[in-house]
Image (cartoon, rainbow, N blue to C red):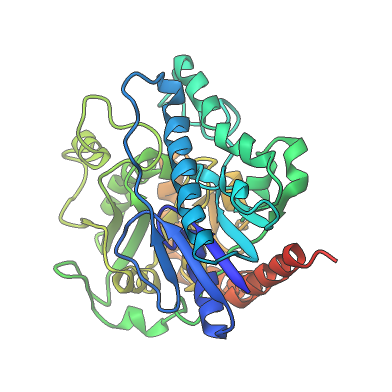
Length: 408
């Protein structure tokens, strides 16, 4: 088969699928993307560049759609060049979030398409307004609604949609759900596996050293920000550190903002929270390594005594699935996307997302009750083996692709 993938940040959500296709060595694979340093053997990467940035005079509510329209136009022009070189795909697979696919069916109108639908924005009832500490500005509601323009246009196109969880499907309009397939994402269980010996050996992360007798609390996010509960975690730490002199805390993540707003007055959320907690937080035992190499991240998950994962009602991070796969004792927010993966006192402990006092209780409970932590970690691994196998994810992809390419 001939596959055409489209994602502005190659390979995006398609890393494992593309590697699977390359490994079976019977397909031709093209991938249209913006420039980046990533490469995969067996994949022809075709780069596009936006001709300009957003026009300064464009209404703020329409600026995101202007960029999406530029992407759609540029990708379609790139596809025309590919077509002239003799390539016609059997299927087009891509992410709808940035508008890249909006015009591509004008190039190949009869080629089936499988589009990734990640999130449908709401002005209430989901992430916006969830945290009373940061009340939304009603003046921004129009801009939030406008973020769905690409979603809504994509939903009117021929083709099939995919989304990774039932919760993500549920936040799309009822009329749209019929064309959205829930395709759960998997984990490489061979790579992400428990390592029981990790707690018996020192862990050295380039200046951060965790001794075998110390307790380790971990937190991971792309960036340290309220959407992923960073402020709640930080406010739970003074009590945890005061009650356990043997605890070290490692919080992985950058200082940018992926979701939500920047701190009022500038700076970073890390600076904001460490300033708020000055004098109450033993920073000699709280470590901020930033963004780290994957093998170091994995070693932390395999070593942790209590891994905290919090999120607003928003897309669940891949790190949650990987923490379950390595058998980490997980404390997670009781928000809807998380509860598809974590059952309280079964595959982890659930805690109210915004309550730092109860989070501290949960962390201390795991640190003090080793048998509970071991039981939860083992159950998390069993859950991953049953529900998160990468082989099952790829088999589901194969079935859906065959159904779209050969509907009869």
